[in-house]
Length: 77
Image (cartoon, rainbow, N blue to C red; front, side, top):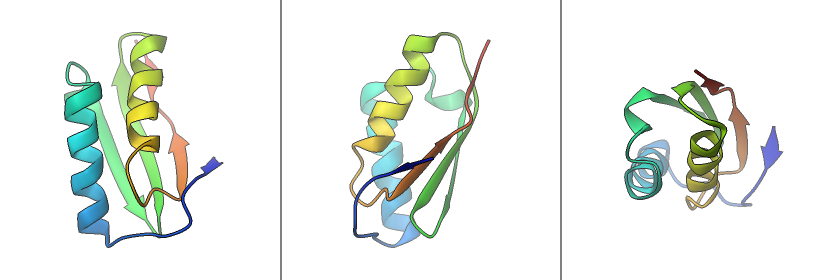
């Protein structure tokens, strides 16, 4: 798990920011990615076709304001 930003917006604001980031940076695979948020920790699960897509999703989420921790559990098909 990676520690990121120091402040955390509400879960609804954080989810909207993450969904927007995924649409911009990982549109092809975002439909297979599940996002769970608890106390500033974002857990990614689901599957992506390549390591590059996994890294794109992770990078998009890391860039969303308010993400304090990231637990990337995405599998590669």
